Image (cartoon, rainbow, N blue to C red):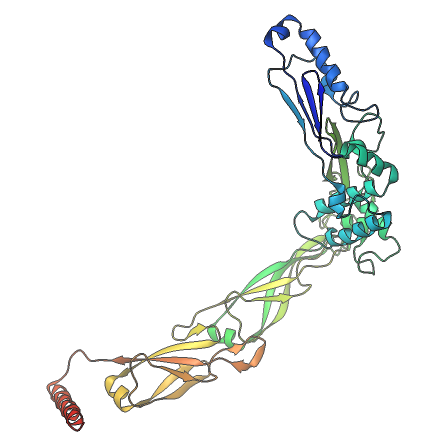
Length: 449
């Protein structure tokens, strides 16, 4: 780190990235006596910070220096923070060769191209990678960047038009030209198709099923409303008999770039062209679809619901969503399942739960019950001595495993034993006799030991 003193101004510089902290201190008595002198002094101190060819603090790069400056307040501070490290952006060292820089760019560009990577921020990352490669792949720009940092290639003051980066998609296409795009066969489509073709959105439909329909599956015809390609203009959005022309605002790019020069360099903002809405073309709109290229229509679709679906299950029908625009592929249809609960049978994953009540006599002696299942009523044998809360298993009477209809869950029958609250005299007498017999049996068993 170097610390340079210019009167009341200090400059601190680390490595090749310029970090400037300009601090001016003026006693109030001096400011009041000679403001003009202090103004000229501050301008000369800042001007001497920049090299003759540097854009940082060069003539015209700080507009506020060209006006009549007001005397700075005590303790005023001006800070310029560090620029992004282009070498780190590409993941290469400062001694990397051109082939290493090119290889790193191609790998990152494939991963972050917006046509492949749909994550938020992927396009901004792609532009950042392209800007870094444009500088480091050019010997003159790389030399300026190594000496002055990002200000050397973006600043004003003697740098000419080098502050304006190329369109990152043009750079990508020029590098991958003749290679079939990304993954071969023109999978990326390039900048032209990016600005024209728009994929259709997915369509959603809620299908309500009863309990048995969800368990065993079914075929059902549903009616959906979706956007389809306009038959009048064949999806172009243009009035029949007319031809689209290149947008003069964006030059057919579908995007416009606005640049603004600041003390820190040139700032660029890429926006969708408002004249052509990003298509790159201007046309007379079709009267049927109002220029959208699509119209809303109703269609009936035969849908096969597999066995074992449940509430929240989603079925995907490819290509049956909304039509794309200007050659874009159609979206998909997602059918969301909702199942009406059964009042008697409860579902737990692939098992079905059922609760039955039996008398204490049946629990002691055993019995046979008629139990409802999804396959109909089935006889269930309750063994003698069944305890309250016992669960009996009816194998293979549950729900089929989704996409494996030959595999089924079980039906679980939970037994509740009813104890009578009131007994007749005869019943009470018999129970008391039974109780006495049980006591005698217990006493005999204890004495025999």
